[in-house]
Length: 150
Image (cartoon, rainbow, N blue to C red):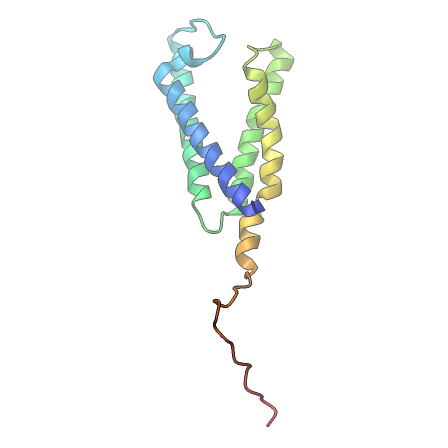
């Protein structure tokens, strides 16, 4: 698979995953958070609100992946937001200690995936700029160009 193909596939996967996760948390509220006890109406409200935004973040990834070419600047911005989420989790660990074990692989994804997206960001734009050699159909003879020196 080409780098442009990886960029499109990973961007769509990110988008669909964020939409599904956001919708799950909007519907279930704080009950959707592993290891969270009943946190009351305020925290439940905040959980649902932030996850509606996370759902929108997923829709932005899907929109980006459907562009041709996939805009590198948008991939970088969305990746930076995702990375900032991972950095926020690191701050939380530093201040409050270790969270539920499920949060640790999520933190790893939020720190590892953005550099991959940064690396792939320009792949589709570059692929669209570089014209691919299109082979002649089988059995079609091409004539040489007429000479211009006469």
